[in-house]
Length: 506
Image 1 (cartoon, rainbow, N blue to C red):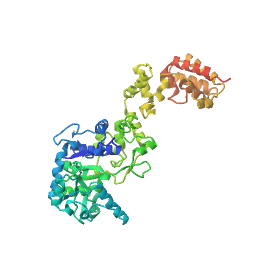
Image 2: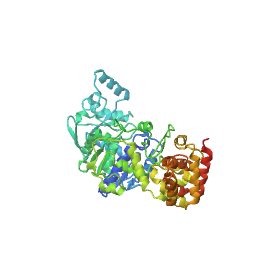
Image 3: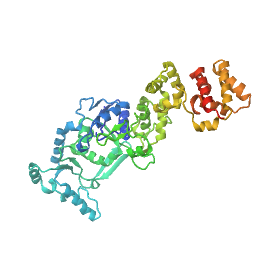
Image 4: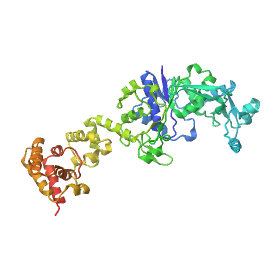
């Protein structure tokens, strides 16, 4: 059975790049009838941020990315939080030492820093590897007996992986093909830290193996570490069950030069996190897609197509369609630039798919906040009429306000452009027409536009836009006669009379 995992660290809010990684794992699992696991990788306790784990769970739940097992669900391969699995990692580290694949290292930070400076003086870069390890304080250079004496004395140590000298290591990547690197280019990574916690490298290999993960789909930032991970599978004798790897391209800044960051969002005014985040340390608040009014599947659809395409021109896809069409081999090797206009386009498209009743529910909240009462049928009618003009719920009141409240002021630029000194005469004629003809669309249209404006050679734009100023307060809104029929004859006349009084030019 296909088993994939999303394994974030609880070091802060979940970046949309991480959301995309979770989404691709989910689509792959569902397409193959497999299982999706949420594992929390909290081996770096110094970077742990309170609330981050719950934020990750809530964000993915909002987006409709579902899990079969995980830290919040349990399951047969638990526990699913690495700090709860701590005792098991040491035995695996010791196994690697016994089998000659790892060693104890006692180098103090100041000794490592001195070695770096020594190399810098020679215009070289220090790397703890097959060329330098025998110059350092470790069980290879000191001997195992001395190493054991230091451990028994309580001296701090780490466990490092021992790469064989000068071998080529090939990673078979589902997106990029074979990626080969020579071991001389790789440093002996720390696998087990002095605080008794494993590093990501050891923990994720052990966890992926013991949780029977079949495919590892993760960001390309982990590609340089993949040779180490392949070698760890070899060292443990788990090559036959090693998962297949797929390293996803980065989400890039809108300009395309570098990884998308929170600073880019702050600079250009868009969120890079799915939900609003309140930093418990600094108190800083970062915006979220949910709080800005984005619909969850609009975000999902947008992210799905940032680095992948179905091979067709289709852009709007339900989750079921994404699952059916998703193909790892169609993921691009190149980074995908974030496009704010495209994000808004997806949001607008999905907003239009909402029922009139759903939009009316959002509009009702705006009315309630302002103490405005209106019948449900009227609110639904306005919502349906104005929905196509709206992208975000926050636009509802400004877009629809004149259906519920007469204007108290008039846009100065619109008035200066449209309201001529004789306009009060034409507006008085509008009132006369509304009072004398049947109150229905065709009758008003004929009497106003044909029998009055056209017959008298008047400028249709000036008269009708002035009527719109009187009713709305500015030159925006739907078809004018439809608007009049919606708010009613008496209300329309009241608004026109008030505009004549307020805007009469002597």
